[in-house]
Image (tube, rainbow, N blue to C red; front, side):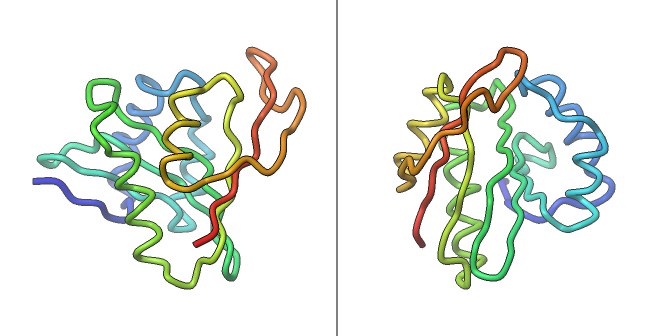
Length: 141
C-alpha cells in the first residue's frame, strides 16, 4: 500500500538514509531537521518504507519546492509527480510554485515541465560541486 503523508520525527533516519543513498548532492542533517520541525516534508511511503520525499516551504499563496528525492530503485514510476500533485491538491490556497534545478538535470527539468512548470530565469554559478547554473522555474496553480 502506498500513501503520501507529512513526515514525522520518527521518519528522520529513513529520510536521511534516502538523502545519503539517492541524492547526488546530499543535504546536511540539520536542513532536514529544520524542515521537519516546520512541517515542510512530505513522504511517499510504500509498504511502510519511505521511498521518496519532498520538501516545501510556503508563504501565503506561494510555495517553493526545495527538494524531491526518490529512491533510485523506484525512479521513473511517477512518484515525484504524485508528490507534486498531492501538494497542490492539499494546498488549494497556493497560486504559484517556484523551484530551482540544476541546468544539467534534464530528468528533473522534464518532470517539472510535464507538471506545468516554465523557466522564468537563471542563476549563474548557483550550485557548487560542480559549479553549475540553476534554472528558476514557476508553476501557476
